[in-house]
Image 1 (spheres, rainbow, N blue to C red):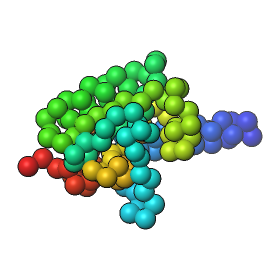
Image 2: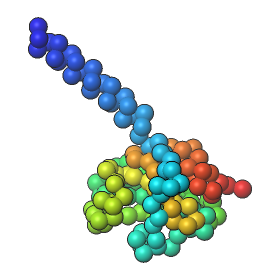
Image 3: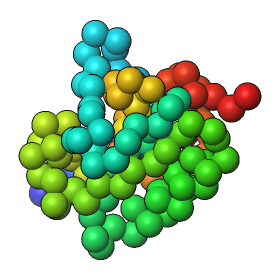
Image 4: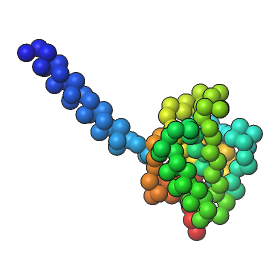
Length: 141
């Protein structure tokens, strides 16, 4: 009987964790203004966008990374002053550690000055990316 209760408890905990991870996947978490990292063009290997920069950390065998790359490239192509930069997480481990990137894809939204205004882990939806750009001061129009 004890084994059955432990199994049931483990199943419930697993379901709760899975639901929370699915809910959090791709959602952007805003950074407090006084706790924002600032990235330079040298760190990301590309110039910053005039209005915003979408920085994606990817890995070679990450399927959601390909979908995220397509989404971010499409959005940046439609908005003036917004650029996207993809960084291979495996090749830039120091930066990954410094920014506490725990999984790929991770997307950072940088404002015009390179400050990280928000970040998301997992595949974001188009509306989430646009809202994050709006909060960074790079909304369309």
